[in-house]
Amino acid sequence: MLYLKNLTYHPAATPHAILKAINLELAPQQIGVIVGPSGSGKSTLLEILAGLAKKTSGTLHWRDQELTPDHLQQLSGLVFQFPERHFCGNTILAELRLGHPELGKERIDQAMTAVGLGDIPLSTSPRSLSGGQQRRLALAVQLIRQPYVLLLDEPTAGLDWSMRQQLIGLLGELKKDWTLLIVSHEPGEIIRIADRAWRLDHGELFPADPASFLAQPAAVSG
Image (cartoon, rainbow, N blue to C red; front, side, top):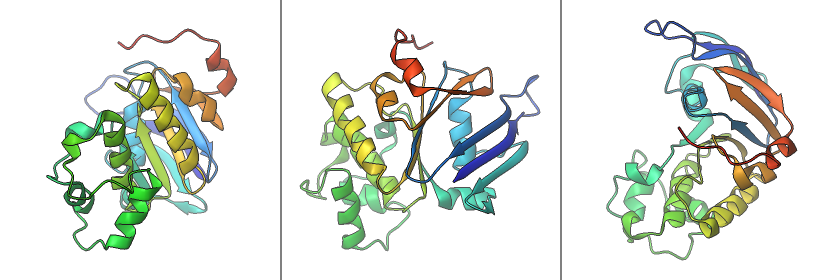
């Protein structure tokens, strides 16, 4: 169980807290979706859960263990919005091994197979992949680390309808082995695979029925 209690983030340079007393529970092998407009604090929350930003107050737990920033970096695997812009390796193999040069072929093959890229040569340039394949590779980069929770920031942004459907199907499959927390300003089809949902508005998190988002018109990014 991922458990957040009264988590607050209030940088000294800002007049108001960016995140205000966030409470959240997400069970293992569930998909949670947080919906909110741009600027509501969604990405900041993921960065805290990934150990990239430090909470101001509150507690975070995985199962019965309270988590420090070091624990969070081991617990979570964060896939940024447009992760393909951050690729550094000249080949898929180099990208997968960044920071982990000791990784063996078996673990690499497992990650590539899990995201449906098992047939692509590891010598392929990441930049030659389609948009959907690049998102899958970004997931494989995190799966290799074997995190307990996958954190995804707007995972379908910029993809066409067909690629979105394929990626959403993959995320539903990954739930068999991982817990996923997804943030999006426009959940679209993603909400259909959600077990839990919340709305984040001006730094405050409110539980929501996933079905409540299906009848709403698409939001406009701003």
